[in-house]
Length: 402
Image (tube, rainbow, N blue to C red):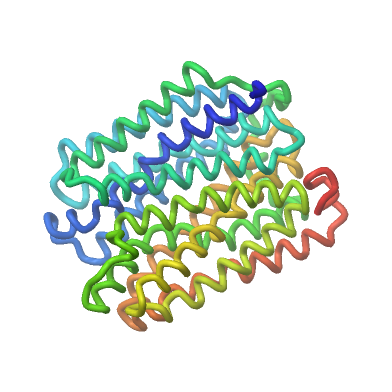
């Protein structure tokens, strides 16, 4: 195994552990609904609070050029450890919604230091095969995000202990970064503080189109991740009970989200071989089709519902890393970290809207149609990436493979 491959494995493992913080509260929502009497608004709020915190964290990071001025490794370590602490505080001391929202917001802010800097570190190890490398990293993030659902589905741990397990995993991730992760040989130039660089990514046509594609992708992704567990449970209830090939809804949710790691790996290979725009357009077309049709399986045969959900879980994330990879190839080298952080910030701002929209859509139209609105994002994303494909700057992508 080469040194770059070892670093890829170590950084991906650290990211897997750290991102268990993201959906830790979502995984225990049934218990919180019972104990705190949460309605749909409160349940959505616990997920949206993380997104909001992440947005504020990435905005501050971008405005201060944090991942370019300071060591990306240090930013990762601090973000992960403080995020683990805020998540543990919720587990140990909180008994109502509003303090929980504040702590989930703080956790989201901290995760802004765990995700974009990791992509920058990975980019310093790979020039050829960068799409696959960042794809594997995002695949690890995907499994980490799904991990609390597995803990909830396989154990009888109370919700507080489930959150503490997630915090413990995150701290272990910070230890991996501290002891074994290093910057690679293809380091980006040092940057000076320049607040204008946070918005510079939108001033050039090619990076702007890559961001627009990413925004369409994000409209769909986190709303799907946030509500697929509720959908799967409600579908079984509507049918009168049963299971997903022997899996309860929590374990089925883990399977659906975690298999997205396979999509990230295949997407990375395809993107490096056939081009960034080719892969992203194909993945968004497939995931958008799943979003539009999965509701038609609601209350139907569980295996059919699970099959569509698995295909959706694989395709909805397969392109995610490639938008970030495109930004590392299209942006000024000294401000790659800032560009990645700005792209991520705006993308996650959109997720707050789509996550919030799902419960009222369920109330008005039912689960058969609620997810269909998510297909709007990938449809617009395909248009943006098609325009990027025709731009001369697209030759910078994947060694000339558009």
